[in-house]
Image (cartoon, rainbow, N blue to C red):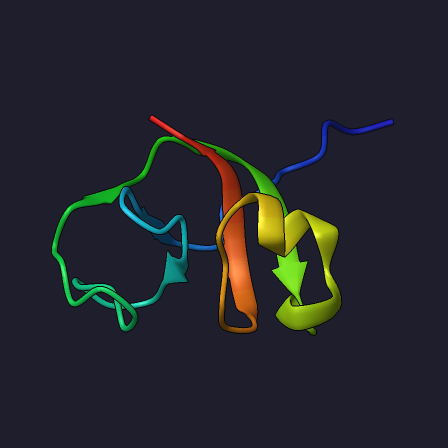
Length: 68
Protein backbone atom coordinates (compact mmCIF):
# COMPACT_ATOMS: atom_id res chain seq x y z
CA UNK A 1 0.00 0.00 0.00
CA UNK A 2 1.51 3.38 -0.97
CA UNK A 3 2.02 6.00 1.75
CA UNK A 4 -0.74 8.54 2.09
CA UNK A 5 0.17 12.02 0.94
CA UNK A 6 -1.68 14.32 3.30
CA UNK A 7 -1.57 18.02 2.56
CA UNK A 8 -2.54 20.49 5.24
CA UNK A 9 -5.42 22.79 4.46
CA UNK A 10 -3.55 26.06 4.96
CA UNK A 11 -2.21 28.32 7.63
CA UNK A 12 -3.82 28.69 11.01
CA UNK A 13 -4.31 31.77 13.17
CA UNK A 14 -2.32 31.43 16.38
CA UNK A 15 -4.88 33.57 18.24
CA UNK A 16 -8.24 31.95 17.35
CA UNK A 17 -7.09 28.68 15.66
CA UNK A 18 -9.08 29.41 12.48
CA UNK A 19 -7.78 27.80 9.27
CA UNK A 20 -7.19 30.66 6.82
CA UNK A 21 -6.54 30.83 3.08
CA UNK A 22 -4.72 34.16 2.77
CA UNK A 23 -2.07 36.00 4.75
CA UNK A 24 -4.33 37.28 7.55
CA UNK A 25 -7.14 35.90 9.70
CA UNK A 26 -10.66 36.83 8.62
CA UNK A 27 -11.84 36.66 12.25
CA UNK A 28 -9.04 38.46 14.14
CA UNK A 29 -7.44 40.38 11.29
CA UNK A 30 -4.02 39.34 12.60
CA UNK A 31 -1.10 38.15 10.50
CA UNK A 32 0.12 35.91 13.34
CA UNK A 33 -0.27 32.65 11.38
CA UNK A 34 1.37 29.25 11.65
CA UNK A 35 2.03 26.34 9.29
CA UNK A 36 2.71 24.08 12.29
CA UNK A 37 -0.63 22.80 13.53
CA UNK A 38 -2.53 19.55 14.11
CA UNK A 39 -6.07 18.32 14.61
CA UNK A 40 -8.68 19.44 12.11
CA UNK A 41 -12.06 20.54 13.46
CA UNK A 42 -15.14 21.74 11.59
CA UNK A 43 -17.67 23.68 13.65
CA UNK A 44 -21.12 23.92 12.07
CA UNK A 45 -23.27 25.07 14.98
CA UNK A 46 -21.10 26.77 17.62
CA UNK A 47 -24.03 27.61 19.90
CA UNK A 48 -24.87 23.93 20.40
CA UNK A 49 -21.34 22.52 20.28
CA UNK A 50 -19.61 21.63 23.53
CA UNK A 51 -16.24 21.59 21.74
CA UNK A 52 -16.83 25.09 20.33
CA UNK A 53 -17.76 26.38 23.78
CA UNK A 54 -14.65 24.82 25.31
CA UNK A 55 -12.43 26.37 22.61
CA UNK A 56 -14.30 29.71 22.82
CA UNK A 57 -15.38 29.52 19.15
CA UNK A 58 -18.30 31.76 18.27
CA UNK A 59 -18.46 31.39 14.46
CA UNK A 60 -18.83 28.31 12.25
CA UNK A 61 -15.78 27.32 10.23
CA UNK A 62 -12.61 25.22 10.06
CA UNK A 63 -10.27 25.24 13.06
CA UNK A 64 -7.11 23.53 14.31
CA UNK A 65 -7.03 21.87 17.71
CA UNK A 66 -3.34 22.55 18.36
CA UNK A 67 -1.25 25.40 16.95
CA UNK A 68 2.49 25.75 17.53
